Length: 257
Ligand code: ADP
Ligand code: MG
Image 1 (cartoon, rainbow, N blue to C red):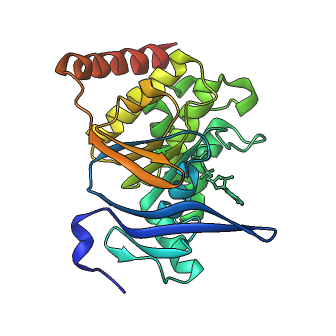
Image 2: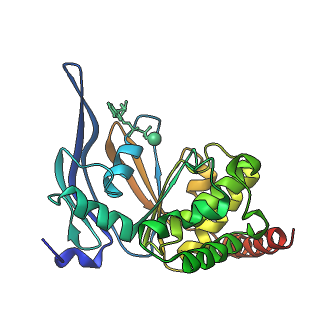
């Protein structure tokens, strides 16, 4: 237990397998997956529906445990940890983003973003200040008091992203984050990923959308629960510049709207 020699990697997984028991049948959702991901990487997880992407993300995010195999997050062997210790590590290291946003419908954008800080015991004035700052950073300064129903899908996902990073997590896990968005909003979310990654946050994004996947630095391809491909993506310098330019435009444009 504690820090081990794998602390050089943010994620180290060995032989992860996850079986589900359905009636008398066993479904192997994840099959002997080993993985090393260094800090600062930006990884797309691709593969057909049912290939094990969500199962992997849940294990890497300490929301689920493997049936077999071992997993180190930030140098800590989480395989054998008690649930409360696992939750501690999750809250400290990981921010989550989901296809369906999962915002609290009765709470304003600001209250949604503040929520993880309340759990972390940050006092109210400080919570408000940091949540405001996060919303402004994602071009939502004018949307603070809106409830989710009054926001577009793209705006809701940016509120969810602000909530995901409000605790300064080292790792963001995004499961089909653009699956419910139009192309333009999807582009905004990927540009924010690029910016977050540029500031040092490690990002894993499971996606069906190759336009989203190609913005990552590395692509892992899954099939039938197995890791079938692992390659580096090399976006051209022009594309990187374009990403940064458009991001500035989005943030400025929205903030002044
Ligand atoms: P993906 O995210 O790539 O679509 P999933 O990880 O959701 O794939 O699912 C992988 C396989 O595991 C699928 O065959 C799915 O039906 C099965 N599975 C996922 N979650 C459960 C569960 N809670 N109970 C039973 N089977 C599951
Ligand atoms: Mg999935």
